[in-house]
Length: 186
Image (cartoon, rainbow, N blue to C red; front, side, top):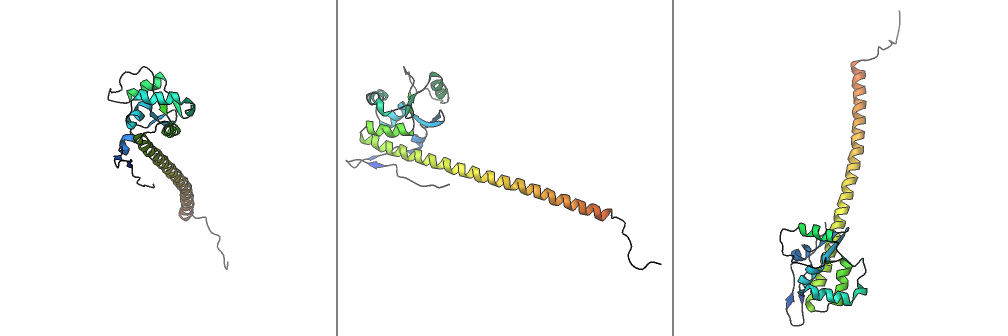
């Protein structure tokens, strides 16, 4: 598995370092509807803006967020997701949250222009890339394991065949056929 380190620090115009630990960002990526997504409230927290402000910007630019970039969770999905967490800091939302796919998060960078949003977006894109590479590495590893299993299976069959031939030879040695004598007969 390939490993690489990417600096998650971004230096703004005033020389300040803007960063969020990778673990924090990774903990806010969920798997819903067979894709990796991030919730609007988590993104707002990372961008250090209020969720309603983030959603206002999204509503102003809805044409940038088609269904494959962003979707609203169903009530059932939202309840299921909340039940996975031990904390009850989710607060009282009137509507189910928006979930952003990787492309949706990327599109957010064109809507939000703060230095923090740009830095966090770059970091999120790098983490999505790392996750994709890790999944690819895992897939390659699974394929190699399947190949080894197939080889072992065919080798097992060959070993069984060799043992059956050995059994036949041992049987012939223990129970030899009477040989016809050759040579001079009186």
